[in-house]
Image 1 (spheres, rainbow, N blue to C red):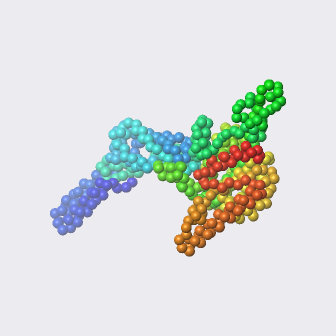
Image 2: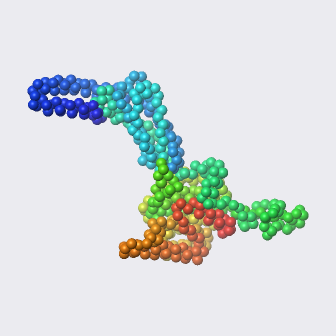
Length: 449
């Protein structure tokens, strides 16, 4: 409850008359008369506001599963519970939406006449953060019939749901996803004769490799027959995601925009979405996929096979977020080594530094004996920009030299791991999805597992 605009206007008028009455005795009587009349009116106006105006009912409708960065419709159904009961002079509506959603339409002014029948008000929100969200109530600011008072009224109206990464295209048809993969540079092309598993026999056609001719089948059928191969299937992929400080760096993502503005996301967000897209491709290749998150949040999802398991995978990791917390690469690899019972293609996504070469040397040698390991590091664009700039002054020269030395040490570390027989990959956040999937397909075609 607070005074309205009319209350302040009348109060200023009374103060003005009181000030003049200080010099003119005749106006004192007029001042007392107005005050004596207005006080009961103000009290009656207050009672009408408290006893008769709040007769509203509100219902909210919104999809419980939202997609990151995609607009969602919220529908509010408002009506008066009693005929002719609402005598508010003004009505302003505020919907108390979660901080993880963006909206800029409130406050909304409603007309009293419109509330004599059901009013449906729709507006859009844009989710800008993964995780759970909750609507608790709506708020009305009601003006008293004579405008002396305003009453804030909260109506409980609860809705709960979750915001998932923008992978709605994964649940749709394959053609849509194939178009997305082609735009990112991923090529889903089977290379005949270079796989590990026999697929079928077929009649030779122009352009087929002569090396794949099956001479026994050719002799029986008396026409050229070739053997067709495919990438080896029924293998296992483990994704290790670092949710600690190493991937907590924020970067601008021009490909993802909210209301025309580029989104600011962490490198972990890009790593999570790339992992989900890679999981879809691996499941389509009949491989089983496991996922482990370490650092700020620790989760372990055991290997699952079949494209239907992608939904369960998304629901289990949609709300994982990075934080400036320490993360142990050694412990994550050690835990994975203890859990895995068969040869696995392990993909660790983090941001590796020069000191990791010594701290991980023992565990990397043990993993190499039983599994295939790919170490993925995201580029630090700020360090690269400093290393390439032309320094202006001694301070900038020291910063440029330090950045160049830091990046050179990282490069030497990757070369050392490659000489050990490990796979390494360094790319930007925007290129991570396509580069990671292409590397996976290259491993499959090369028969490295």
